[in-house]
Image (cartoon, rainbow over the protein chains, first blue to last red):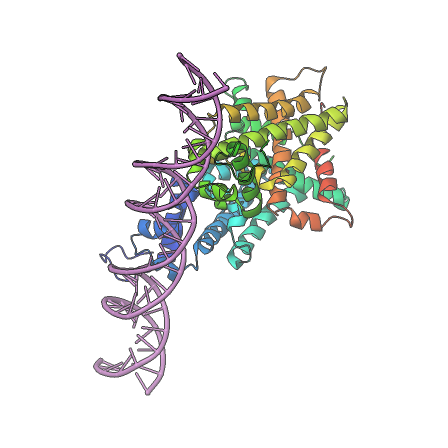
Amino acid sequence: MTDTASPRPYHHGDLKTALLAEAENILEKEGIQALTLRAAARAAGVSHAAPKNHFDDLTGLLSELAATGFARFGKALAAAMAEAGDDPRQRIRAMGLGYVGFAKAHPGLFALMFRSEMLDGQRPALRDGISAARQSLADAVRARSPEKPLSPLQAAAQAAALWSLVHGFALLLLDGRLAGILRSLPDGETADTLLEAVLSAIHVGD
Amino acid sequence: MTDTASPRPYHHGDLKTALLAEAENILEKEGIQALTLRAAARAAGVSHAAPKNHFDDLTGLLSELAATGFARFGKALAAAMAEAGDDPRQRIRAMGLGYVGFAKAHPGLFALMFRSEMLDGQRPALRDGISAARQSLADAVRARSPEKPLSPLQAAAQAAALWSLVHGFALLLLDGRLAGILRSLPDGETADTLLEAVLSAIHVGD
DNA sequence: TGTACATCAGTGAACGCGCGTTCACTGATGTAC
DNA sequence: TGTACATCAGTGAACGCGCGTTCACTGATGTAC
């Protein structure tokens, strides 16, 4: 919470948070190649050397930004599934819509989160964010077959299949590659309808 | 075919092809951020202004490179499916293994092909390459239910589901995100085994 | 077969740009006593 | 409650770097006659 009364104090107060917010804004509006330390500093109204006090380098800033992305992503998935109740089909539907919905709402951030060559996977914040999101995903799959025990390979395949399906759908959609398929849909059908049909194309517990 | 006898002729002979080859090499070995017009010229042993005679700008070079990638990708998929024969299940398995296999063999190129914000989708070569690859994909799905007619939504969903599944699997694998799941597999099982299990998790014609 | 000339592909020096980084500094904050 | 001092966050000028682009040039190729 910055003090809006004071005009322009020498110390920002919460520059780190402000830089992350501006960085996300740049990422979504101008793309990742426009996101530099200098650009973030400029947007935050601060000298270009100031970010060095909070992030070692650009990788540090990107990693922290991705970490907040994963944290929010995990929460969004968990919330969507909580609302869906206990039915496995409903949970998977909720997870898929939540997954793709997040990607559509934050396309730049989502892409950054999965561009691991630009991130420092060792950062604690990023590790935590990723494992939180992964946990939400795992919860969706675990709910699929609560009684019947699966072989390790089957269990792994179910998790990987669901994740691959929604991840691939999200990326193809963001990249505009599904345009042709969407155009072939009956009038009035949207990407969400297609996604729901896609989600029901995979086996659940049988 | 360059004349290897002549020492260093003033004219390269086939600089465009050479630049594309060097660009792909840089892309795979050093990553996309290292791929610049100057770096490609340097690798081809040519002055840094020379590429301007063949590509307008970096987007042009990237687009042409992606176009050759799609062309080879489409051929690889078609070949894999041709070998698999007529059984729908086998064709899907072949397509999936071919899809992910190409991504593993050319990770940098594959990523570039689906980073459309860096490409000029208007370029004829790129359009052609994409539609060839899409055709191969469509062939895999069309073979799934040759007799039973599907509703437009069902048909679109089957195509989108298969594509999303293999695309998501490929990207998650390249990004190292499947490491946890792969580690949970029984000893001796590889990513390909997991992929086969994943492919059989989606409905085919039923 | 030879000559003149237009066209093309590649050269190398120069330019401006934005970047990350360094550095001495300054203003603000917190702590010891 | 006050004072001294260490620490911290942000400043602004300067640096070197690699980039894309421009430009006059030069060597090679192709074509007209």
